[in-house]
Image (cartoon, rainbow, N blue to C red; front, side):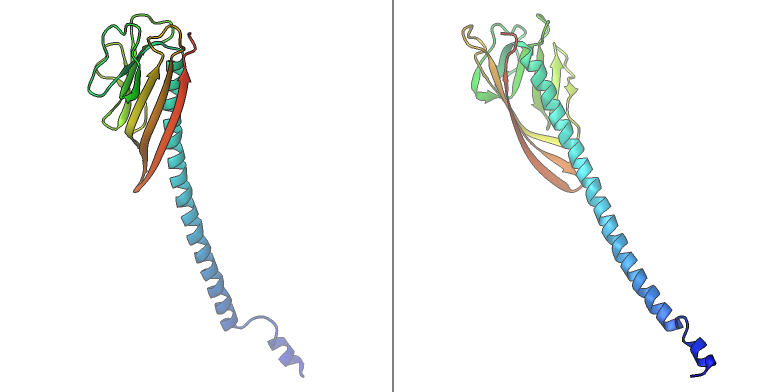
Length: 186
């Protein structure tokens, strides 16, 4: 072999470079597609997590105020809370709302109820109410089961059942949360 021929074998040909660049480009496009898919899934997961955190926070807030309250009055479907809650009202079949006196309050009751797919909190005779969950949550059923409200020998307790759907883009994610509360001011 001559010296001239050896110099020609060093390096890559144009075709080899084009093939290597094409393969590299295809691998990078596939990787970017997978990355964008993962980013979209992560964004949906965060949105779902945020909405469920909102539901959990609202239920925990309700639980805390009911636990420290007194004179639970369970309101059955279609009824409104009386201006004077008296000694309370039990409902073992489940009510659609609950009124009670918050801790330290003797004259202004607080009421929680489901209304138009959301949960609202009413204080006193406030007709507007305050929405306690986000618009991404649709409440299908909010039920309160109260026992021991009018019995001085029994500690009052409340069972809450919350059923609904979280909407994230076109997805609908159902949930069912239940909690049991014993009155602390016994």
